Length: 135
Length: 293
Image (cartoon, rainbow over all chains, first blue to last red; front, side, top):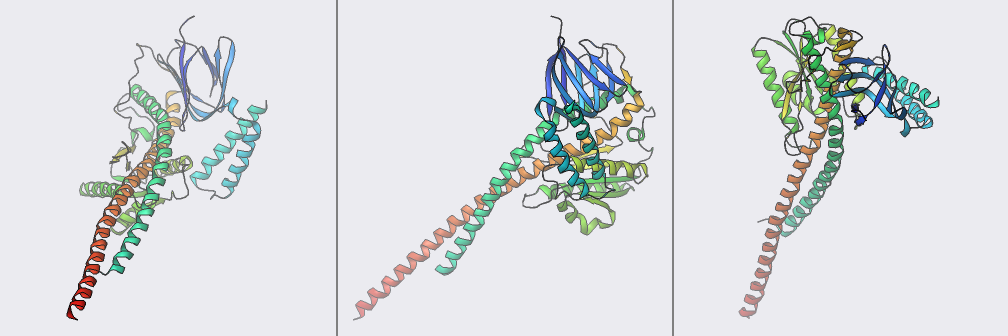
């Protein structure tokens, strides 16, 4: 077996994954891209979407990320996501509930504040996460 | 000499104070654990982010014209100090230390003839500086509703700062907060936020001569990266501050509980002496009364 790719995915809240994998497919702003071991140094912004981790040809983990960056260096791949969640650990129903709670918070806030904007972004993230879970 | 009744009341009052400080200490200890975990968990992101920024700025080269958040406005006349303190007291010198550093910083900058503006986060710091510097204060962020969720507040403050910066309200922004070194020490620290500065201790990644590919272009990445870097810095400062507050509060309340204990001991001693003295006095009175017969 050839060398493995050192992959880590971190969000401001915590480190979701760190370890060695075969192959990672991530949603870049300009299109999806795959990273294998010994990839050339490369950096891109990400859009909301699914990061897939592959061992051989099978997908072992699917993580939903909101925006952020992917940084490929000789040391490995690092994804810095604004927010990320392991798709195996959430259900569409749960996300729906979170969305309702968030909607309440948004309504209680002043429209012009920066906070309002931040929560709106969070809401659209949850929306797309739910869509990804349903499919 | 205080009467027996008075002493008894004092002992009771110190005892109830001790109960309160003990409870507050335990609450702070529990909150500290949570805050500390959150701070630890956010560290990998902050460090990696700092490394990425360091990498990018290093490859941009010195003096090149990056985005305004990185390159600065070309002047350093107007300084904005962002002071982060706690919403509550009862945490020893925690808030006072940060306020002291802020004062020193204001005086230093004013001494150099710069214009200083002040933005406060957390009620205690604003209260401390309100008397002397209320004319410098431009805004205040209230964290009393934040509980443990600082992210929306950090993003809100970050975008607020960017707007002000674009409007030319300041040239340099410095964040003053308490760095959470460990449970016993939370020294106040000043860190420059804008123009963005990559930390000096960031790891340099050896590319073995390979050239980075950027997608989309390098300036575009910086454009989105820098505001996030700003938010990350604010968020981790808020988290460190929260952990520091709880640690300081725990230490202060531990001290208070111990002091109350000592006070109770010395008051009880006094009380017992007074009680014995009274018994002796009564005995003498009875005996001398009997002898007189």
